[in-house]
Length: 108
Length: 120
Image 1 (spheres, rainbow over the protein chains, first blue to last red):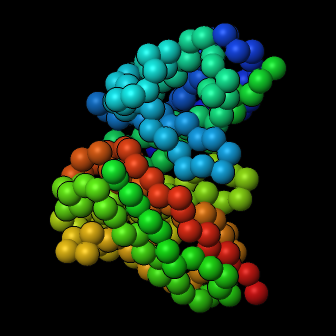
Image 2 (tube, rainbow over the protein chains, first blue to last red; image 1 turned 90 degrees about the vertical axis):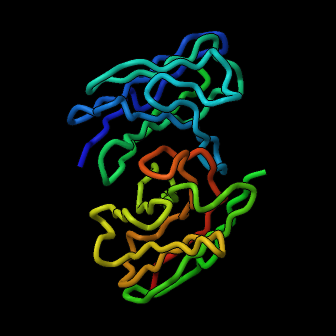
């Protein structure tokens, strides 16, 4: 099983700041089969990115993803109030699929 | 509009069984893989199980292997999760999610979840 480790656990930032979220895999994720989700309290997760760097239709371009192999990053430029949430990475290359433990982006 | 509606959750004693259902609408169900993901209260997401479009590939998390069974009925546009030998650590909100393709893929639509509580 591929273990995903997200860091930091919590990111305290202000609106307008840039957020950089890390996701590290215990082994290489071939084809960059990494997805990123956003989850707000009491809501289901929402898919933001897939293939490590492809943005889902309708997701603002302030969200971007990068990385390859075992190290992946989600960057949120110019944080908006609605961006303060919990973010999860997921690998869908090998079964069982796995999620990282999440990064909470909170208002400083 | 894509919709996924889960049902079947509830309070159940340890060792008992429960069957979750997820009925879909708004897309061609048999073109896509389907998944179950759970979230324990206050915790992160845990992938539980997945099934490809034609049930050709079925996979489980190690934590549920041998106890849970996923299945789908393409005519009824539904996916199911049969949960046996339930344990307290199975307590969670169970989400049904649609894959973005017929096989390995992330989840682009999610239901609102059905709560399973395992307690005596």
